[in-house]
Length: 106
Image (cartoon, rainbow, N blue to C red):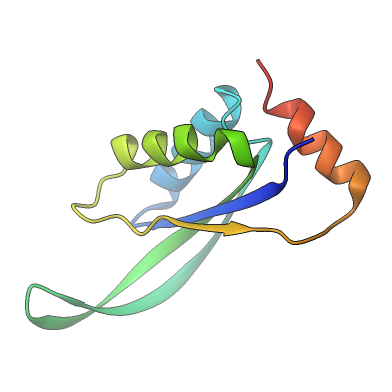
């Protein structure tokens, strides 16, 4: 059984977040995805400090599906430089770990 990984990104619209979540789960790249927001992000872009409203998407996947999920998010993402952060989960509910693994199989 693979370790669970969380893959997180942010986008500029709820509809984009929902589409990323649905396409990743439908493609078995993630067992589930949660959309949250809106949230306010402040960041440097093109020499200026910007503030924008964004929506967060957090995907739960197995370690062997991370690369394909990251590729999918990068290809479908509207930003020039998308935030895509991968975090390995050290431990968790073993039954949930099994469920995530099973749901990311085709």
